[in-house]
Length: 636
Image 1 (cartoon, rainbow, N blue to C red):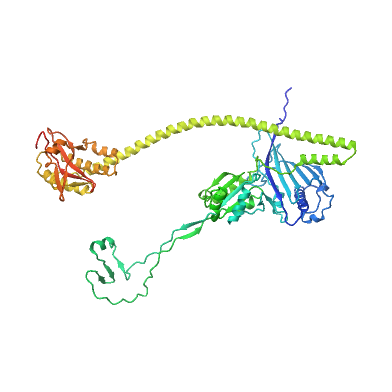
Image 2 (cartoon, rainbow, N blue to C red):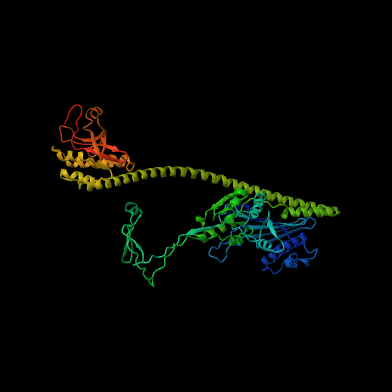
């Protein structure tokens, strides 16, 4: 028959919160520190069980401040189950105390806007263990979350408050690899601090993330210049006064009220005018000031991340030493995260200051999730199952009763079976994780293929867009070019004798029209199109800018396309045989007109402009237009 049942799902476990440190008391013996750690944990348990009517007597012990009143036989192994499960193992001979609380998920942030209701089937198992050494106590805390397979609800990382209580206890001196865990940042303020940090930073067993924050330093603030006084002042200098005036004319014009003094015509020294009561004082320009930039709230972060990470604050003066000693190159205001000696994140000053408070909240939340599913080492700390085996072995060695020994062996066997089940659960978790990983990899490969297709389409669209933008840009440039050229063409002279004046007014920086060229144009009596000659001069002005590197060949071609202008060299034979015809004189210097542009042929109305390039002036010297100079075949 078909059953309508609630389907059971396999579970998988993973670590959420993890913590390992050493209590290194300076004034107390390790035994007292060991007792303080245990009593603080039991006080935390009593606080959590405050709603219970009855509590197990094994947890009703003195508060940690009264550790001296603890009786030698008060610490006992026990188990308690009443909705939650408490298990504790104490092995006095080995200095081992291991505690476990197993509870169902009760939700998170109850009553808040971001409240999360309980997840059905989710359980938490928190282990707290202490191992007494000769002069210290090792502390280990681990929380395992067991979720139904396929659970999509996220799991927070809860730090048991007992961790904070132990870290802040003034007598314990909780530390990890030399870093004091007291909710305060580790300050690098000197060379010795950097050397101390380097020794700890290179330790391989340090599992807590390191959050390194560099001092933000200073920034220069531009001064606000005072307003200059207006109105008549005792001494004024004309606006056009400059060193060029001094060099040219060796004369300075100064005015004091109505008195004018010149260097060329000295006059008697006037009486010194009385100082006006309201005469403004001469103000000196204020110097730029340095202002301290906003520092990241490292002290608040260190307090919040107690038991999650170690916050290191580096003074700006120590940044070079840190780079040389540890190879950590931080800039002022940088924030970087290191895990196991490797940098995993970095944020520049400009990144976190855009919205400092929002960044702080997000970064803090991310760092509090860092222990989740991470690999942690717990030194010699022994959690519950292994501690129970130690306890059973000690009892077996102490008893001489065969029946009792057999019972202990049976319990050891059961405990080993429990460990096997835990290992099987871990293997099942790994298998499920492997299946999820393979499924995720397939999705990733499919997504990568899809991404490659989308990227290819994007590149094609970008290329198309770029072509269109280029075409639009070119079209806009062409429209603008022809519009400007049309505006310029509207100014073309309609009278031949005004062409030179027009060209010199517009193209004085590019063209130098000689007197010979002006005379030739004035005497030229053959009909020709004045607009063609003006367009040719416009082309030559563009050609000059092209030779100077101010214009591209593409734009130059636009100037040439209407009449097909092209700069050509004059014939070598003509320059040789008719050299006098191709030579002009400008300011006593002779120039050979070795280039020309042309439009039309002799049978039609032609236009010619002969010129040469003057390198020093970076101009064209126009020596003849608009007719045809003599050649070796024909003289005109």
